[in-house]
Amino acid sequence: GLLLLLSGSVFAQTITVGSASGAPGEVVTIPLNWDNNGADYRTLQFDVNFSLTQLPTVDTTDCPLPPYDSADYIQKSCEQRPAPDDNQVRLGLLRLAGGIPAGKLGDLKFTIAGDATPGNVPLTLTGVVIEGDPTPIIVNGNITVLPPPAPAYASNPAPGLLDVGSVIQNAPDISTDLSISNSGEDGTTLTGSCSETGDPGNVFSISNPAFSVLKGDPADVVTVTCDSAGAITTHSGTMECTHDGGDAGEASPAVYNLSCTITAGPLPAYGST
Image (tube, rainbow, N blue to C red):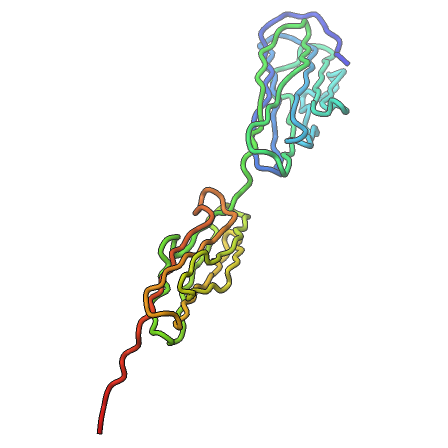
């Protein structure tokens, strides 16, 4: 219920809800600050409203903070309200004697949902009750949900021409390696797979097409082989590597233009006796 309203001087005062940012699954701390502008107010109550979908849990252990939790206060509560108002934290202070001093009232620790949508989650104040019923300055806060850490695709050689080389027809096949690495954020894993999307001469094949690279680990190697039994000519093909990398790296699919030249062997030397 509402706190008892006591008479007192009316000055401009400010209640501020802090702001913070974090990734899904992280815990962020939001300070609650009070500025009495030098006046004595013995009664203060307000609700902090938030989204239960984006912020499913809130820890009020550090609210109120000293000195607001001392024996000077008849009431000193800071709690998440019961359903259906559990999207609110209510702070209530009633001091026995003297005004409530300016300072940080407490910290609210919100857990960002693991599937939270990136963007701003507002933290808004409602239900403000101050002794004497003045009109306070209210500064609402927000929690910025950051995109989750993302891997990033990188390769050596880079997307574009991937020349397997030149080989004599029916000689041992030739191969070249494509090294795929994760240049994204720490703790991420880049996954994907490479496949031929064009091979008119039917000479190219891919070994170890799937890759999974933890950030900081050595690159995975995809091997492209040219079959020397193909026709004598320069063969062209296409390989695409689809992946789950973010915007920081090469886009998906990464496209490679394959090339392999098959040549005729030297003519046998003619001799007679």
